[in-house]
Length: 113
Image (cartoon, rainbow, N blue to C red; front, side, top):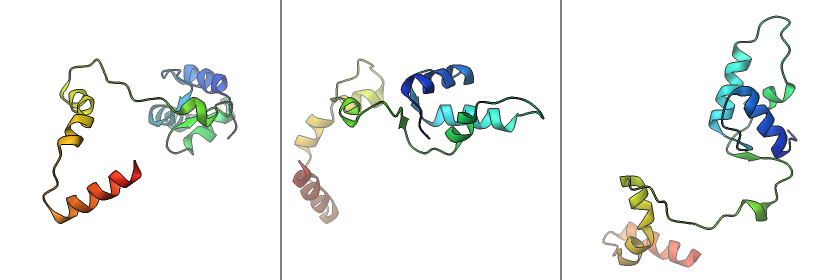
């Protein structure tokens, strides 16, 4: 499937989902719903069929890997999950593994950095 970001956005608009230029679960579900509700003789954008077969997050063919990498920034949201993510570095620095498995995981994660 070769679609540019603008083509993906146009398709997302046609499907009635947020036009962010990234094919993900919402775009796939809307495309599958459109396919499931096809009537005999009805015209449909052939890209819709392609979208239903994708997995993960699919960006336009005009997006390079350098453009995809975004640095981590803290969320301004105060919900428990965002608060947890916002403090992950501090909590990781203070984490002391107790179990043998935790010790192995900490060692492996630290070697990545």
